[in-house]
Image: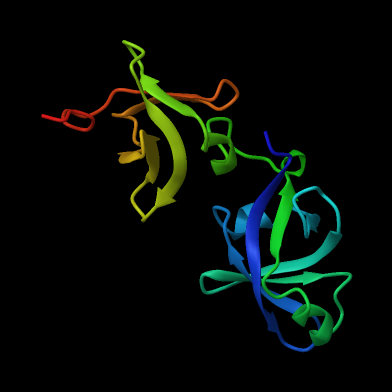
Length: 169
């Protein structure tokens, strides 16, 4: 499992004192607010001390202790921010997208394997697993009627597919 997870992308400066606009890739700003340190690389290097985080429409405005001018902020535009998973608290039944990608998807009862999770999408109602097998994509909503268990440590997702989901007939 990855130790450092993508949390969003710095997309623009905000004001002249080093604040930046962040495109959130995490659930919401409340999740983001729990971090005191974020990182500018996936290995936990280039630590940035978080001074403040506040919402702005669908984004966040973030201020780092180390970034004190618009010129310094300008140099970070386009950079991805990472968090240390050990610094975060998530619900017991929640999973990180990074841990779900690559999981094998199989039938909860007969162990038929349907493929591997290539991506996790969300268009509002629920997360959707993009399952790939033999270059063919199948999309499965993450709802209790279908997804019976996600074991990210074993890299297995157990499902009971809806009729016709994987049937060729």
